[in-house]
Image (cartoon, rainbow over all chains, first blue to last red; front, side):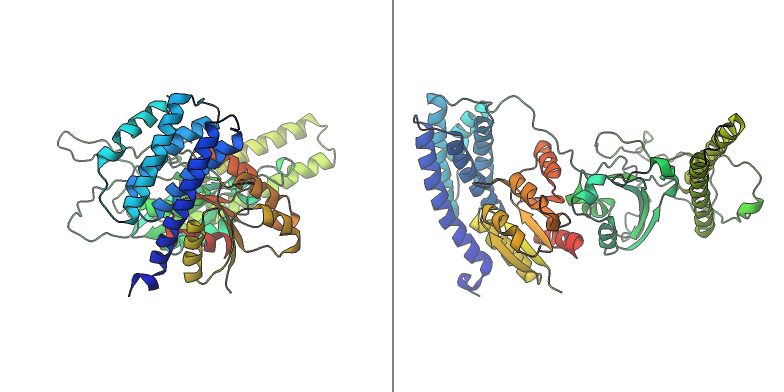
Length: 368
Length: 122
């Protein structure tokens, strides 16, 4: 196949033609910037010219061009935002940068080597013009709070095994307001493996506290897949900042005996709640490594646990969910009927709500 | 059914890349080099299944375009993906505030863009 029939090659050729137009606009814009006719729009035109060259170059992997344009664009952005006032020396640097950008475009188009010496001096000048402010880290990413996955399974010579990635997903009101729908995100997860989504109804507030635009119910999601957790997170990449994701740390890697859980109705013995392994929201940070022994082996903290049929847990959670809803309705009915003038009713209702919350918390700790 | 996508970007190269990617995925693509014309004609058109918008554009930038789209009742539920080389948190916050549904950084991964569009509009 010749280049003429390759759509990507055609677009690349078109990109270089567009570059010529952008370089011309850049040159005209710089001359205007250096004259009394300079305006905010002039700076915008200059910025966009460099920005567009960078964007197109990135699509074709022209890294020298991208890196130089990025630095040039950053300085122009400071001018645009009023952080930098271009004087004669700065304008001279801008014109030099424009000339080098032209050279880089030509060399890239002709597929000729680009010597670092071509850009080094001007890059140094441009970098010196950048303000001292530290570039912000991307905090629009989903809040991934724990990567405490134990990867040391002694299976180095074995093919990757399917893993279960569990996490909670909490949508913000903005996620819905911006035209997104969690169900579509969940559906996309099914391309990676088997997905289980369970709403956490314990977070449902009393009816009186419900607000139409707010999202109260987080989801517990498990994905059985041979892909990494990072692959799972990638599904949520483009809605980062509109939702919060908290990974649920695996509690044990050893198979435990399955024991029967007494029927909910007859369960009278108090049960110590399992520790909640969902980390509290915090700054985005890299994975926290498990503690290690001096010889480098990872140490798993021993933990007394039992395995319970998931259906039984689900049933318990559903029953508690119904209990919470009924408690909310009852509270609302009492308020509506103005029956809460009695101190005894108030005290009883308050105690009922407290017990319901305690049951919610305890049951959800079992799931976590 | 083929998804209809409106893509607004002042760079011809990017418009061509987007069209190449989306058409190959069986989507119907409408291209525009800035948002001004589309803001004027939004009232008369059926909302596309999704909109892709650049940020740095002449006459009307991406923030203004997204706000104008969201101001139309018929477009309140239309997913809008920002496609830009920018990745600053402040710009993302502005886009989110304007009504953007998501943010994808250029140069884009074609597979990722298609998957995102199918996810929000499919």
